Length: 415
Image (tube, rainbow, N blue to C red; front, side, top):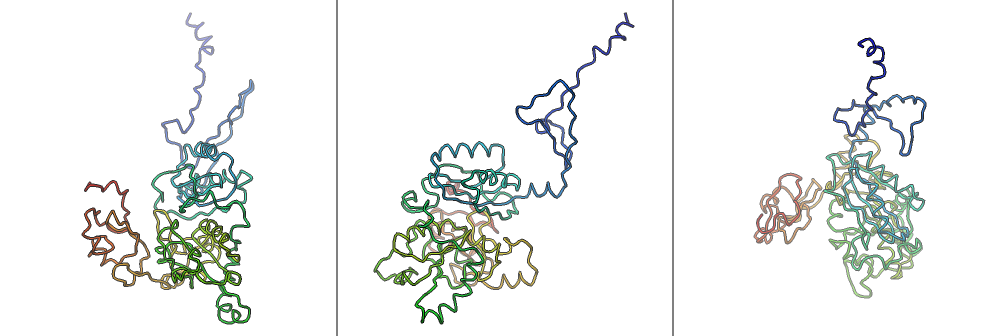
């Protein structure tokens, strides 16, 4: 009997235990290895299948995939069913580490988000696979401290930018109604020719070139193109350049200009605000409108800070980025010193010089002003922008360093 069992023991051998998917296994996966699995729908045949050797991934490639970046893009294209598009985008982002603001509507998409390089780039590439978005400009910049946004907000929004009355009524889908885009090199040429045009040829040709900063005052405070007037607005939705009509308005750089003979060069951070606002100006009779393609961020990457002074304000947790952030290579110490010495801000409270170009919010919840402040005033006013705010009833504590306040309701009623 024993010999019979021994003779037939090969029939009782247990089948090989199937290997477990590395993402579902509790055993750690060796660094630098990726597993290969059959594509969905693949069936094993009756013949033996040779297993592929694990692919070796260099450590530097893994580091690149894990490095956090901020990605921005926008595109005006007609979307017949934007709500269905929102669902598609949410499905694609399932399981991917993406935080940020992604808005879609009948006029296109506007996205600013952060995440590991692998996930962040994969989403942008997926969007560009659609023929309508294939030529879309995608910009990336480093986020050295991790996510630059607290969470993901991906939804339908009637206006792709914050604008009074929304933007669905504007002819954004008609490229002829938007400003003519200039490449960074073309923009630089216009800047270099600007002085000559204003000083000499303007008297003979009658032409003039005007730089229009389509941002907010606090953005201008930490950096701008030389010669651009400081905008007298603190929110894009309240922008009113060129809308003053016959009234005298010294705060409006377009007030009283010759609309036929003035070339208006518009710029903003990434380009979308200029595209939107140029359609408003077109309807008001302004003809010679030009915009910086990809905005200041694209210009600083392509042309470095030629004609630009200071830092670039961004609407994420980083707030203020030096021009070197956008370069392909790191600047030398001499270049960095020269760059940092070209522009200093001004303390909102005492008007003294501020070398560190980084904003803070007023500690008064009911004010919440975004402003530049020197260290002395921050301590003296306990994080407030003025003496009046310092005695306001609803105050948040003074935060040290570059810490940011949480949502206002966290501090509501003294909590």
